[in-house]
Image (cartoon, rainbow, N blue to C red):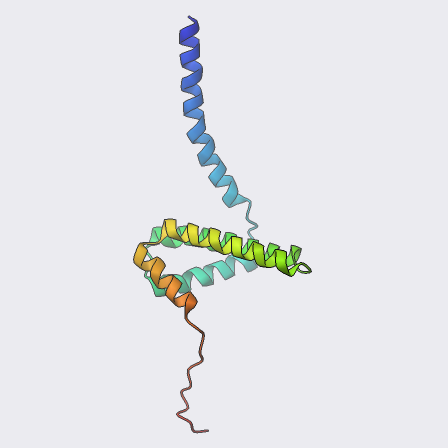
Amino acid sequence: MKAKICALVILFALAYMPAHAQFAERTVERAVPNGPVFSSEAADLTRQMANRLHLNEGQYVKLYAVNRTRIVQLSEINTYYKADESGRTARLAELDAQYDQACGRILSASQLSQMHQEQDAPNVPTDNSNGRG
């Protein structure tokens, strides 16, 4: 009888762990404020990424959540570490590493490579005036 009870407890524990992990992922998404500013910035950023990287619908939805979380965390870091430049720099580097890791789980290798190339490219304004003007 004790063996059956132990087996039942172990079975319940194994069934509970994946359900708890799924719940934890959903609560992390809900923890992000749903402010219109953060949502619109995330939508704009994700739309730009979709146009450049040719995302499918699933990738778009996942990247939107990642971008929204990143924008909120970026705002929090800039607020809390306004006076501490070294702490702010360290937190921003950590945030960038987490963002790259999250994008690596969502994007294909070629999309990720293209994203990194575009981030590393200097933003040089194009001059269309041909020197006249």
